[in-house]
Length: 159
Image (cartoon, rainbow, N blue to C red; front, side):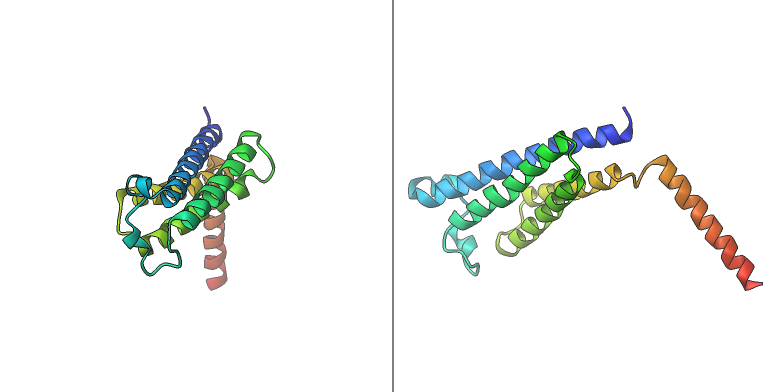
């Protein structure tokens, strides 16, 4: 299996994983905010919302499910179907994941899950770069020869 095919398959799996976990996590936050009996099981402590623009986890849950989950579903579908805009959609998802976690870290104390999702966001972006051909052997040869050519031109002009 070549690098591009492997990157495509891994990207599909990562997009699907994040889509499912974001929709499930957003749903849990929504249910926890609507049902006080379930809030302690499904939602982080309400004290984490202090200093944030939210009074409950309803809006963050909706944002997580719709924005993060929804965009990952869309990127997954585009990637599986090999549509033209798949890499742009996957890149948007990678940046979105990083922004979501960085903002979350302002309000919620450190969690290993945050590190996992930062790595996943970086993985999404890395896979996009692989699929763009940045790490192909031909691209590496071209960069190497281009650098050598530039170095020789610089040496010739210095004489």
